[in-house]
Amino acid sequence: MSIASSSTIDTPIGPFTAVVAGDGTVLAAGWTASLDLLLPVVAPGLRPAEVRARPDLGPVTDAVRRYHDGELSAIDDIPVRQASGEFIQRAWEVLRTVPPGKPTSYTDFAALAGRPDAIRAAAAACARNAAALFVPCHRILRSDGSLGGFRWGLETKRWLLDHEAPSGGQLQY
Image (tube, rainbow, N blue to C red; front, side, top):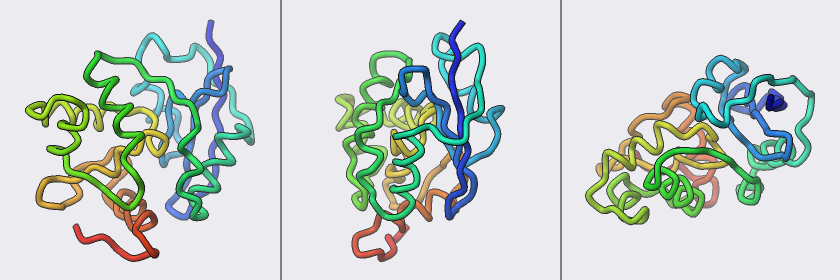
């Protein structure tokens, strides 16, 4: 029986909850206070049997606070565990290399993940990402520069992209 911990903290764009395995690895994260919205996107083989609320998740909570305070690289070294097929796994790894302030298109993201023609599969990797923020799918835009979708809402995606824009400016969507 696997036991995980969760914590919800306030951020400038609402509550943020992370679910962390016993070894400190993020299993799920997003801008919600509801575990019912987070746990279903965790791969069944990784889904914890029990989740215990804690006020603080140590390095994970610290990284979330530091990121929202403007230290954009604070999330980079937090370990994440997700499970899927080979391409989706590769796509999630690639998402972690997209730098803040330099969003890319779904088309370019598919190419970076090694399958330039797999644009829909690249979009599916974003949609199935359980570890938002730590696997920054918000940095992927439509080819025309528009926002596309985001599980946590387009206002949240816009805030994140503006937060990451060079010199605190706003990106054009």
